[in-house]
Image (tube, rainbow, N blue to C red):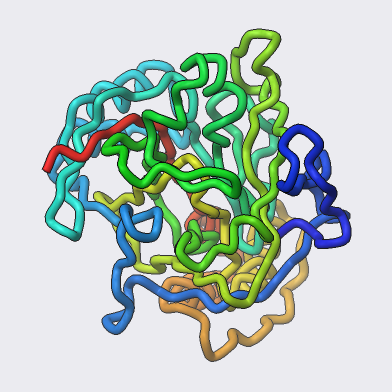
Amino acid sequence: MFTRPDDVVPDEERPGLLRAPVGEGDDIGDVRVCELRDLGAPDVAEPGLEEAGFETVDLSGNVELQLALDDVRERDRLTGDTAAALREAVAGITISLANGRTLKVDLVADDGLFHRRSGPNGIDVNARGIEGINGHGGAAFVHGDQDVYGTPLRQLMHGAAPDMFRHITPDGRNDDASTFLLNLWMPLHAPVQPLALMDVRTLDARRHQLRYGLPVDGFLERDEDATVNDIWNFLYDEGQHWYVRTDMGNGEAYVFNTLGTPHGAAILPGEAAVAELFVALREAAAGRAPDPARTPLPADAPPAVRALWARMSEVLAADREDAAWTAQAEAAADAAIRRSIEMRVIATLVD
């Protein structure tokens, strides 16, 4: 979901830039159908962090990290101890990039570590809402996580962030710095609602990148002058190139530039049909639902979505008098929930 063009206003603080309206919701969202280039397809090339602003990396060899992620999967929640274990497992590691270069993680930030859960087609599956680092849904709005010139980087780094970090903004860029502020996004289970990322080379930043003030006092501890994050929202344009990886497995992760790489949770072809079955299974397991109509899957539904739909349909058609049926229904529905961990790091190219 993008910002609606009619809602964009000139930015008064930085003349020449544009600003998105305050608030995020269906009433101001611009839902668009985008071509998604699947990085799992053999004919789709990895764009690259330095070139496009994001990249898939392999972290399967980091045993401590994988054990901590397994703990989050088992609990379906991020505890304080596991959050500390995740930070410790990532601090100081090196990450190989596809172009042969290497990133070294210099610092893991205190902010930016979250556990996200989202149902198919964006169904809210966080009944208790946001509770600190837990209870976050998939990010429906296309956004960039931080303005290098804004809050809180301006306060934390006394204005030095634009000189220190590699970035591209509508009114500035730094192509020479070897240090990045990065998001590390790790799927725990993501058959639906995958993270979609834009190749920044296809972004007309001056026309389509919008300043936005995100209130964070509800889930981050901040000083009074830093309770609103200066981030980015975006307008849609057909020239933008979007990427997903529908076969992303355990051990794989994305690194992407926190300072503006556009991203958000995508809705895959077929998720609407899976969402119907998801709701029906949950209702039926509670003894409330009739058998739903099964909307056929579109031809372009990816394999993971097809597998979910087939399993859910099979369970719904099974004998509900069987003592094991309720557990099977709950498990089939649970398998359609996207879960992920994200964290923020400072990393430097070392070769």
